Every structure is written in structure tokens, then in C-alpha cells.
Amino acid sequence: MRNTNRTLIDLDALATLFHHGIARAHDLIQLGLSTALLHHRCRPGGPWQHLLPGILLLTPTRPSRPQRIQAALTYAGHQALVTGLDALHLHGIHTIPATGPIHVLVPLHQQPDIPVDLRITRTRTMPKPTLRKSFLTAPPARALSDAAEHLPPRTLTPLIAATLKSGVSPTALRTRGSPPLTAALATFPFPQPRRR
Image 1: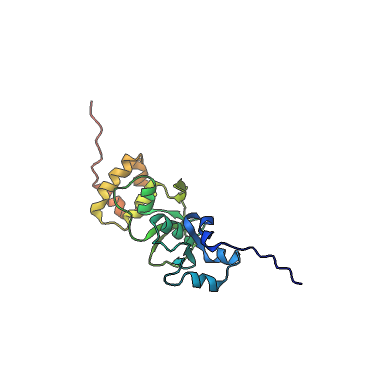
Image 2: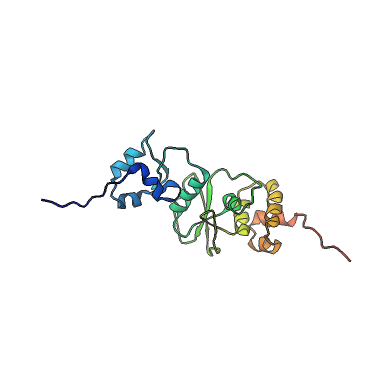
């Protein structure tokens, strides 16, 4: 008689084991699920869906922005940070809606493929992450610098003002500045000190 030590897995409850219901296919296979089962559950109209290569959403509903952020971080690797507009939103700076691809920051040596739903910026020096709403996030100055690379110049003035209002110093913005941010800062109407 063969002894098989198998545990039954409630597939419908599996999403509760993963942050935001996002799982790597590899992790599900490690739990004992077959590749065929993953494909079957991710079929059109099925209970799960592919969000990024090797990354699954374990619910049939349309992915929320936080689920898309979690998928991007899971795909990009354990050192990845949210940056750009999504990071600014997580820091409480909501001047411009966060739409489009999720923007993540990764170490220079990481070379993940870049799917359409993802924007990846590689850097030699990763900033110290901040935990915001359970996401590892780039500091506001870095997030603004990365966002500025992909925004129309006219949107930068209100975004700079909101970032400064949140407590980020002008020096931090100037130090971190990408070319578009540096150009916007050159014409930004900083308050002048009062003369006595």
C-alpha cells in the first residue's frame, strides 16, 4: 500500500494566502498545483487571470490599482520599489491621477522583460524604501523625478507644488532631478524670503 501525504487545497480560498490575491505561478506549482490546472483556471471566463508573465490574479474580477501594483512588484523582484505617480499617491500626493502602466524601480543588474502594463526604471543606487499601505515605495523626491520623465511639462508645476507641500524640501527635488524635473524646477515660482 502506497502512502501519499496529500493535502487538499481550497482553490477558491487560495487568494487569501497572497497579498492582494496576486501569486507567482511558480509559487502555486510549489504548493502542488499543476501547470495544466493553472492554465485551466486562467482560461477566458475562468476564476483566475494572468496579469503579467508568470503572475496570476486569483480572482475573476477586474484588477484594482493596488492589485496591479502588487503584480508589478512581484514580477519585478524582491528589491523592486513602486515609483512615479503610484508612489506619489501612496505618499498622499494626489495631484494627477495614477493611470497607465505601473512604474517600478529596480537595481541596474536586474533585467526583467518589460510587459506593456509595466514601466521599469533601472538604477545604480536604490533609494531607501518607505512602506506605504503595505507597498515598498520610493521616496517622494525620487518618485517625482521618475514620474516627470513620462509626464507633459505643463503638469509638473502643480505636482512640484504638491510634493513641496507634503514636506519634501526643494533641495531634495534639485538633488534627485531628472532632466524634465530640473527644467520644471528652473521656472518654478519658489516663494522668496521676506526682506526685513
